Amino acid sequence: MTTFLQLLFSGLALGAVYALVALGFVVIYRSSQVFNFAQGEFLTVGAFTMVALYRMKLPWWFALLGTLVITGLVAAGVERVALRPLVGRPVFVTIIVTIFVGFLLRLAAILIWGTDPQGMPTPWETTGVVEVAGARILTNSVAAVAAGGVALAAFFLLIRYTRLGVAMRAAASDQETALALGIPVGRIFGSTWFIAGALAALGGVFLGMFPRSVDANLGFVAFRAFPAVIVGGLDSAAGTVIAGLLLGVMEVLTQGYINQHLGDFGDNFHAVFPYLVMILFLVVRPYGLLGTKDVERV
Image 1 (cartoon, rainbow, N blue to C red):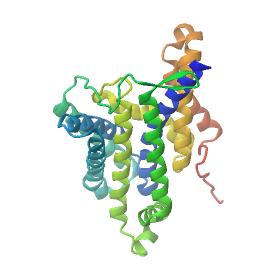
Image 2 (tube, one colour):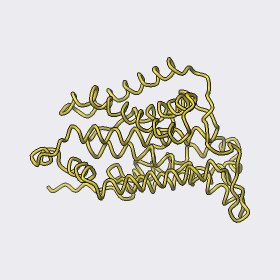
Image 3 (cartoon, rainbow, N blue to C red):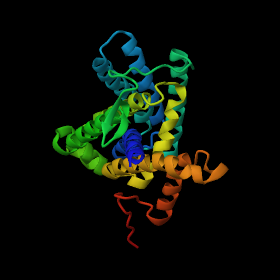
Image 4 (cartoon, rainbow, N blue to C red):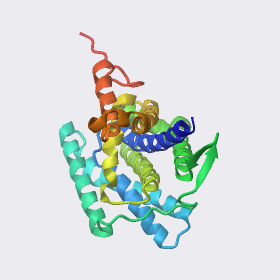
């Protein structure tokens, strides 16, 4: 039971990071119908920015806030410079552009911060643990779950109860109608990308705490979070969050209980398992847990 609780909290911590990254995908897709393949690089930029700001002797919490703002501004800048001029172009054009932007961001990260791993600072003891029902759980895991929960709750409150949230939902529903009603759709797109960048940065900060290192390859975690987008539903923020948490827990439990029974086949099977779940959903329920089912009238 102790081992199970430790794995469960580790899975929830990983799932919270997956949920933050996957939610960034969904927020952008819902608002502008753009699938952003540079989302992983926002995660990398956020993690490196956190390290850089902390080395400037800023308090950890101020460094974190600065990281969210800077990464959000980078994401909003990408939307304004690279994506907004492509409004009305075919979908594959915007996909190619986001891939190219991601490549440029990764190259910039390497040029600025190098390729050597860098330690992610924490405001608590890096090897500290919290005891829950006899299980020794890393403080990093508890903090990741708490921070992810607060960030996700704040996002849903913003979407539900603020003018910006109403405008974002209106733009996602029908851009032409939103424009006719006087909603500045362009600025809403910029705000959406800012939020997606900030969510990715938060995920990058807490992801960097587990191996306690950050390098230019950190952004590839976005591809590990991708199954949560499909399983939860490409147009469902709530479904994506639920799927991210579930897949994080399933991945860690698979690593802890199943890999060892599969012999050579079990090497890194836990990393493949979420994709197997994604394929199953694509076959059985392609619109995801809470996604909208497309209906065609003939």
